[in-house]
Image 1 (cartoon, rainbow, N blue to C red):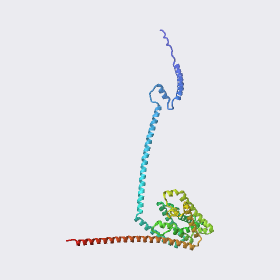
Image 2: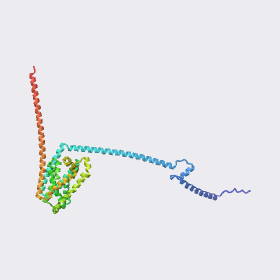
Image 3: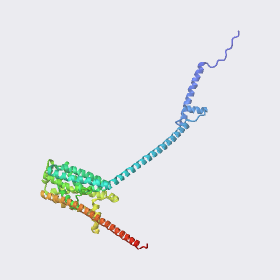
Image 4: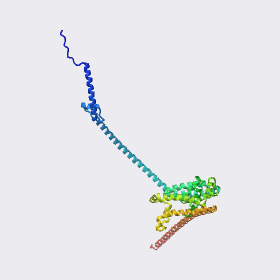
Length: 421
C-alpha cells in the first residue's frame, strides 16, 4: 500500500496564536497612537467609540450636535420660564399695587369722613362739653391737692402734664403744627419732669426750673392765655405755662425726699452760679431751636408752609414789617435775641422772696381768668348784639310787609265799592 504523501504543513496552532498575539499587540499600539493623535483634534465631547463609528461610516448624529440641541432647548425653556416669571411678577405687583391704592383710598376716605364728622356742629358741641367738664374738675382737684398735700402735688402735676403733652403732640401732628413742640414752654416742662423723676438731687436743674417760672409767668399776659375751658386749644396753651408755677411753689412750700436735697443744693450756690445754671440750660434750648427752625428744617418749613412761633411773630403779627429795611434780613437773629431778653427779664423770680413769688403767680392766674371772662363776655355780647340786629331787621320787614299788604287790600276794597253795579 502506497504510503500517503503528507500534506504540506501550514502554520501550526501555536504559531498562529503567537502571530495573532503579536499582531494584536502591534494593532493595539497603533490604535493607541492613532487614538492619542485623534484626541488632539477632536473636541472634548467626542469619544473613541464615536471616532470608531465615524471611521466605519455609521450614519448617526454627532454627540456635539445633540449637546448643542439640548443646550438650545434648555435656553429656550429658561427664556420661556423667565418670561412667565416676569409676567407673573408684573401681574402680582400690579394686583398688589392696585389693592394697596384701593386700601389707601379707603383710608383717605374714612379719614375725611371722620374729620368731617369731628368738625360737625354736634361733634364739636359734644367735645366742648366734655373738655369744659374735665377742665373744671381739674381746677377743683388742683386746688384740693395743693391745700391737702402740697408735698405730693408733683405726682398730680406729672399726670396732668403727661395728658396735656400727649394730647398736644397728637393735636399738633394732626394739624401739621408740630414745630410748635420745639417752643420753650415745652422744653421748660420737660426739664421740670426730668428734675422731678430723674435728677431730683440736682441743684443745677432746680435753679433752671425755678428761673423758667419767671418767663412762664410773663408769658401768660403776653400771649393772652385765657381760661376758656370748652376750647382745648386755648386752655392747653395755658396749661403749659401756669401749672409749673404752682408746682415750684408747692415744692418750696413743702417738699419731701430727694426734692428737698435738690432745693437745698440749688440755694447753696452763689447767685452768679444760679444765673449760669439757668442761662446755660436756656441756651441749650436756644441752640437746638435755632438749628432746627433756621438751618436744618428751614427749606422744609418754607416749602410746606409750616407754622412756627417765629412765623407767628414775624408774619402774622407783622414783626418783620415793623423793622427798618436794613434789619429785615436779620429778623431771625432779632427774634432769638428778643426771646432771650424775655428770659433774662424773668430771672428775678429766683431772687425774690417766697411771698413775692406767690403774689406773682396769683397775678398771672388772675390775668388768665380775666382773659377768659373777656372772651366769653365779648363773644356773647357780640352774638347778642348780632342776633338783636337780625331780630329787629326781621321784625321791621314783617311789619313793612304787613303794612303794604293792608294798604293794598284797602285799595282793592275801595275800588270794589266804587265800581258800578
